[in-house]
Image (cartoon, rainbow, N blue to C red):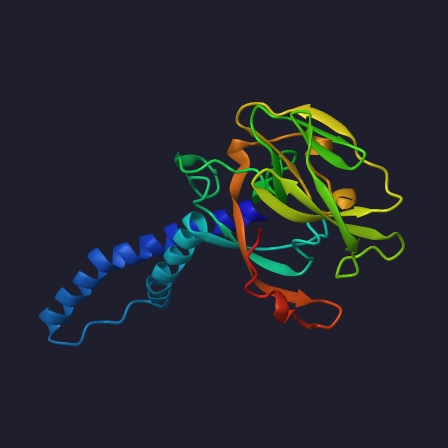
Length: 263
C-alpha cells in the first residue's frame, strides 16, 4: 500500500507536470499569438489542461513533503502498546535516516544512523510492500538475546522495573499485562509483559547494515525475534509525534493523545 501510493503520487506529478509545462511554454503562447492576430480574447485551455495545470503544484508539494520531510502513518495493531495504541495517527521524520527516493527507497543522501531506542518505521523484510513500526533494540555488531522476557545486549541484561498492572487501551481481555520500565542504554521506555504467555526466546548477532527491532508489547509482537533483522535499505523514518488518535470504542478522537512526543 505504501509503495502503491508513492507510485500514484509520482505518476500524478509527472502527468500534471507535463500538462503544466506544455501549456506554460507551448499552448498558452500560441493562444496569445492567435488572440493578437484575431484581435480577440485568448481561448481558455481545455478542461483537462486546466485541471492538470491547477493540480500540479499541489501534487508536487505533497510528493516532496511526504517523500523527504514527514509522512503520516496509522497504527493498525497493538504491537507497540503502551507507547502507541491502535488508532494513533503519527508523523514520521523522513530525513532522519537519510534522504531516499520515493517508490524505490534508494538512499541519495546519508544522514544519521538509527539509535538504540528509536521508534522506527521500515519496510517489512518479508514483504516490502508493508510498513512496520518497532523499537530499535540492537545495532550493527550487537549480540541480542531475549531470555525469560528480558533483553540482553552483548551479554548484559537490560534493567527492568515493574510499574504495575496495565489497564489502558489495548489491555488483553483475559490474561493480565504488566507495565515495566525498560532502561535501554540512552533510552528508558515502557513495555508490556503478559502473564501466562511464553517467552519468544532468541539469540542473534546483528550484522553490519542491519538492525534488531522489537515491539513494546513484547508478548504480542511479530518482530526480529522471529523473522530476523531489518536491512538499512528498508528504513523509512523515525516516528516523532502523535497528531491524531481515534478511539474506536467511543467513536470519538482521543484528545489526550494528540501532540504526544514518541519516545
